[in-house]
Image: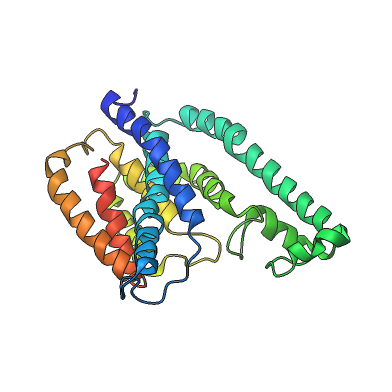
Length: 265
């Protein structure tokens, strides 16, 4: 089954601004203590704008990328042949680049540590010296388990996508039966209230990936909420304003992200 042309166009239009959003997320460097809109002067407005884009609007990007990935992975008719073909493609497009860049980063760390003039730049990182790495340290650095992420930090997204691709048969089984909504409810609860029950793995990945997989089912009708876009958008912008003013309220940010997914359906 080919992807609906309207959905394909929406995804194509959104890709570039979402990539920019990821850049904004990583560009943010401020510390937040309660409200950032609590005074006068140019500094407060700069903080407001920075938080609005980098910690508000941009945080939709990663969730939407997972949702798109789940939708595109499951939009074909399910069969073991299709699954194995997709898995083989992801070995080339995800696994090999993931291993290459993590190993390259590990090599750069080792090189920097071996040169006296650059060794000081490595001080203060969470990783021990590479020359003292144990087998477990290498597993942590490459796989990103039991730590916040792999040694090439941004690649946690690729790592989680690979895990979800491997688990696709189980996800398909759960989403095509009466267990679909209870399964999504459990994932939602873990994402909304717990976030990361296992260090290094974010619940944002399975929840939005599985939501995308659920929306890919023909009987769901992913565009049926289009007529409510104005109302959903209004709620989103209200949540965005509150999120900007009171960013320490993590569930509020999750409400904002969740509302925005519905307008992208």
